[in-house]
Every structure is written in structure tokens, then in C-alpha cells.
Image (cartoon, rainbow, N blue to C red):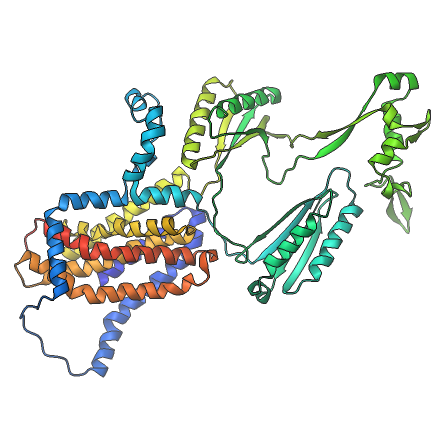
Length: 615
């Protein structure tokens, strides 16, 4: 019991070796479970025997070694294990392919390895043969990495909120956007099941409304209903660009199948030269058939927004004949439009008060009136802008960013395929760019994926540490350097169950899935420890009889333990995939525990019977 409990405690303690942002989500969970495990050991050693002695004071007489009667099902089981032992090479190969070989992770090209690029990196092989090889040799590991892990991410258990954000075109006034927000506020106020709603007018062009719901409103589906109402009403608000979305349990629907997108940050000391390098990178990327468009002027910050403005382009011939200057036209135009800043300040009651001067019809004056009715100038009287020039709509550029005297430009694109192959292709193009770019110009891949290579290395390292820790505990417990490998073998087979559970059923993998890895690593070895320990203590010299008797002797308590673990996790499935952390923890652990039955009652006996050990 001490060895089994210590294995689970060590597995959960590995949480403290994760990166900080991942550790914060799992620390409380690990600490609470470890404390409960320690207390359960105290209860099992002292409390349970005391209660047994209290209610069952008469201990049963010790049974003599009379052997056991083989039932029908046990005979079939015994014959099956014996047959698998006879073909153990094929059996081990099947287990290896079931878990999967990481051939799908091999790069398409390796710089300097001609033989590799001509064989495994050959274009015909990659396009026609490799998908089949990866499928058959990748096993459950390939399914998990490509179908689950690449679409995974961290989630927070947020309170259900509905956001309505609005963007207005250039030239909108504060009054106009404020009146628009008031209309939406009145519409929201008519709904029931709300806790509160707050409106923000950030500027003449942007505003937002944040809506929070009561618990009763969430249960009645008010968030979905109100969202649909706002979406339908936003269609009638001409000229406004709306973004309506919700967060939290009331709107969560898992990760979804999103197209992988990539962003590259480019830096240089000359803006024009940097733009040219961005165009060169775009041309290289566009050569791939899975990349359709490349934006060479992507936003550095997602809060940035390219807007539109009206530009008056005067006719030179009209301006010369009318002796009309650009400044006079601009000054005259401002007299007809609404102002957004004070022109002066007056001293009133010892306080400077801002004063705004504008035409009393300014709020009704629009671009069409300005264009057709004309404006009054001081030198030339009434002038029609239609005769003076033309008005063009121009899209403004993104904000220029500069750091350490270097201009910053972002190139973005979407890859219609696996994110892994898209990242490999991008790395290859960036390597080519570095060879030809001038000195002082650099490229950097901006990554927002769930797990980059550095994090993956640390996670794989923690799994290796877990195996070493269990080996040391098992070696001390069994006084053997061979038998600990028997119990370690259960871990990858249990992971197969976790892989297939997420891949086949499409469940979302978040930080709860990570916790399931560690929890499984400690739980699945417990049953093997009990079986191997009983096997070592049996007073028999018949290897096959000893192994199968140890399995049979512990079968009922092991199955009851697994069944109770599964039952204890079932309540976490009631909220569905929208439940953050606990749902992923439950489904991952249940899948692994179910698959551990195969490891305990099939794989472990075959391995023990095949081992050349002295009984």
C-alpha cells in the first residue's frame, strides 16, 4: 500500500515541474489529491483494521493451502494467456503499433542529409506514400497529436457574458454613436434573466456593451436568445460594423476545427526596404498550394483597425482659374461640419470653460450635401465641390510600429491543412529568407499555439521522470531491477485509452487532460504492484500457476477499485464538454482506467510468464 500510494503521489507531484502558466491551473488540484492520498493511507493502516476488529471480533481461522478450483471462464483465460505467451513477439509488436511510432513527426526535409531528402523527403513519397505509413504506424499517438493536441488550448471557467462591440466609419460623432448605443441598451433592458449590463463609448468610432446574466437566466437559455436578438437587430443598423459574441459556460462549445493561421514578425531599419522583404516572403509562401492569400501588413496588435477616410482631390485647372487654395476650401468645409474639440476657453466663475462653435445645421449636414450644395468661401463666394475636384474613399494603413530604431511589420497567412506541416513549411521559408535578407533585417515566428517545442520537451521529460521514480519505488519494494519494468508497462497502455477517448469522441483537451496524464500514471501502476507483490509472496514453485493465481487472487479487488474510480468521476461528465478542467480530467482518466484492464489482466501476465526469473 505504501509503494502504490507513493507512486500516485510522485505522479501528481510532477505538476510542480510544469511551466508556470500551466502549473497555476493544476497546483491546487495536485495538492488536494496528494493530501487525501496520504490520509487514505493512514485510514487504511490504522482506522480500517480498528473498525474491523470492533465489528468482527472473531477472526476466521487461517485457511490451509489446498489450491483452488478452476472455473470455466478461468480455463479459457488461462488458455488465452498461454497462447499469447507462445506468440509474444507478434503480441509485443501489436502493442507497439497500438500505441504508435512517431514516424508522423519526421520532418519532410533535413538540411545536408541527401539520402534522407531523396528517400523519406521525396515529394512523391510525401504526397502518396507517407499519409498511409503515418496512419498505420502512428497508432493512437498520431490520432491524439493530429486530431486532438493541435486543436487543444487552455480554457478558463469564465462567468457567462455577452459582448456587443460596434465600429463606426470615419467621421462619426460622439452623439451619433451614443444614440446608437442607447437604442441597443433599451433593447437589452427589456430582457429578463440579466444581472447587469454596462455600456462603454470609447471614442467616436467604437463602443461596446457588456451583459452579465443571472444563474436562472443562464439555465433558461437567455444568453443564446439575447444574442440572436442582437444579431438580427444589428443587420438593420446601416453603417455600423457589429461584433457580437459570448464567453463562459453558457456559450462554450469546445475548440472547434479552426484553420491554422501563422504570423511572422519582420524588423528592419528602412520601412520601404522592409516592405520589399515582406513581399518577397509572401511570394515564397504563395508557392504552396495550401496557402491562398498572404497579408503583408497584418496588425501587430489585434486591437488595431484599418479605417477608411474621404480624400478630396482638387482639379488643377479649376483651382488655377478660380484662384482657389486648398486651405480656403478646408476652412470653409469645417464651418458646415460638427466639431469634436473646443475652439476656445472662456473664464467663467474663475473657471476655464471650453466653448464649441459650430453651425446649427451641422448635425444634419452630410457628405452628399457638402458635395452638391456647395460651400461659402471668403474669396470666391459659393463654390460647388463637385466642380472643384473629386472625393475618393481611401483605406488607411495600419499603425506604424518602431522599436530600437527598427520598423516592425507582420506577415500573416492561413494554411489549409495540418498545422504541423504548415509550421514546417514556414520554418523552411524563413530559413531561406535569412540567407538573402540584408544585414539588420530579421524574421521571427509569432507562436500562439497550445504547446511549442520547448514546452513539449519539458512535458516529455516529466513523463521520463515519472518512469524513473516508479522504477526506483518498485525496485526497492520488490528487491529486483527487472520487475519494476512490468508495472511501468501499464502506463503507455493506459495512455492509449486516453488518446483514443479524446480522438474518437471529439472531446476538447484542456488543462484537465494534462492532469489526467499525471493521475493515470499513478493509478494504473497500483494494481500491478499488488499482483507482482502477491506473486513474489506465493509459496509455489510453478511459475505459470503462480502468475495466474496472483492475477485471479487480486482480480475482484482490482476491478472494484477501478469501478469505484470510474463512478467517482462520472458526476464531472454531467455538464458536458463545456465544463472547464473537470470534464477533460474525467473522460481522460476514465478512458485510461478502462484500457488499463487490458494491461493488468492480459499484458502483465504475458510479460511475467515470458520473463526468465527465478521463482
